[in-house]
Image (tube, rainbow, N blue to C red; front, side):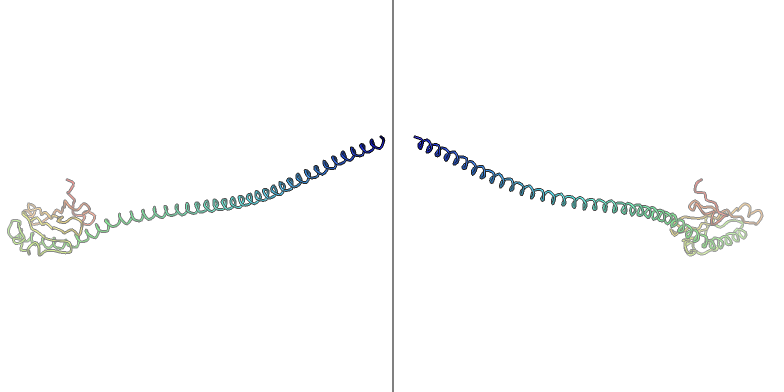
Amino acid sequence: MRSTILLLTGATLFVIGGFFLMRGEQNDDVQDVRSAVMSDTTEKLAKGTERVAQSTAKVAEATEKLGGAVRDLSANARRDGKRLDKLEGDTADLKERVEVVEDYIPKRESVIGYNFIVSDLNFASMAKVAVAEALMSNGAAPSSNAEAGLPAPGDMRGQSLRETYVRTGGTIELIYDSQHGVNGGSIMFIPDVALATRSGIVNWRCETADFPEITKFVPACDYVGNR
């Protein structure tokens, strides 16, 4: 009986020991699995952290390049602004010069034209002498070139002078071409016939309706175009 009890006790202890041994092995297996999972997770986390760090570095590099590009763009904009200001200044200066030239050209052309007029007044002097001589000889003023003993109107011409006429009452008319700006513009020299008849002295009045600045070049001549 006693041996049977011992046998049962031994069997029970064996079973209990086997159970705990099996549980211990199971715990070891679970622990190994947990350790493996944790190690894999840690490795993945480390790789993820590394990728994040690389991405952060690339973002920082891109940000720096973008900042450089913005700085360059800003510098270029300032340079372009200065160039634009200079260009605007040069344009304004050029415009002013053009305006000066545009203002000068007609004035210069006007001076040249009036110089042509003045240079051709010698034909008026010739006609005055002929008219005065005819008036003194005949007691009346001639009314044509022929009566004054002068060549035909078209033969008495100069640089700008186109024709020289002796009109009724001894009036001398000089007709000019377009070189002075007024094609067909004329200057009249009108004798004081009454005074000449009484005193033998011929006074002449000069006037024009076509040349506003005539007085600047021929002080004894009047502009009557605004009358």
